[in-house]
Picture 1 (spheres, rainbow, N blue to C red):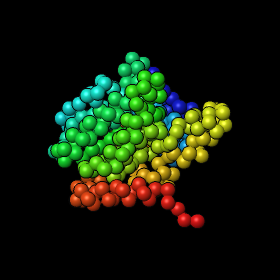
Picture 2 (cartoon, rainbow, N blue to C red):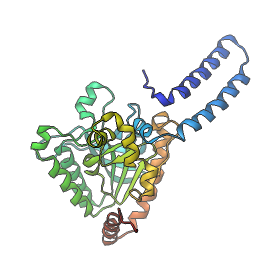
Picture 3 (cartoon, one colour):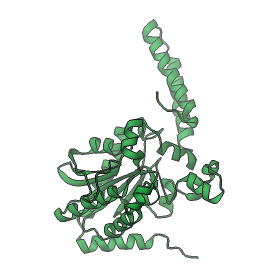
Picture 4 (cartoon, one colour):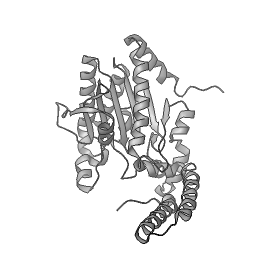
Length: 317
């Protein structure tokens, strides 16, 4: 059964009514085209009213929608010949982090991304997209391989945060993420980042240092989840909606703050309603970014990346 968010229920109910009228028309051979046209026009207006005026918290809810496309979905829609590479060569393989080699329009790419599950069993295997230290070390192993062979890196971020369990901390979770931050800053190949769902805390940043960073229209990118922020500031997780506003975690707000390089538009209602068109938008931006970055020398690439992150947070009074 499809999940229905509270704010999208009026849209879904009207869509169902239109489908029922269409079925009734076919079954009874009755012309209801006028009524269907009127309802369709009403639906378009309702969609525009609902989805063009979403609050920050509603966008967080869409970012977490269980039907939303995940990393493997985008890999299969965007690329060919994907070969998954597993293991960090230190401890094991983390299935919350997908890494591998692929092609897009004949160009080789190294792909890295968080992966959530579609059901309880898979979510337990994928740890709900919360990577362990071995996931981040695997990601860095793949980045080093990309650097060795001169292959651009594409990452897909979709995690509420890195896994905070005792075992993960014992195996050096903080060190693994910090190491990735430092090494990605000096990686000698282009790195392009897409936040496709949740972009939470250091778990996102561990594969998020790039030359170009894009956030999907209904995704979020934040130093902490709204619930975590509310629990710390107000000692009340129910104030998550207020925290979402204060964190300025949506793509338009991040763009205004110059934290990201662009926003990827989604179809009305979110990426889960039309994954293919969302993938086409990502592909268009990815191709453009690869073309722009491939023309830079290694020194220019590193200098531009350095300057990009030095400029974040600079302001004048």
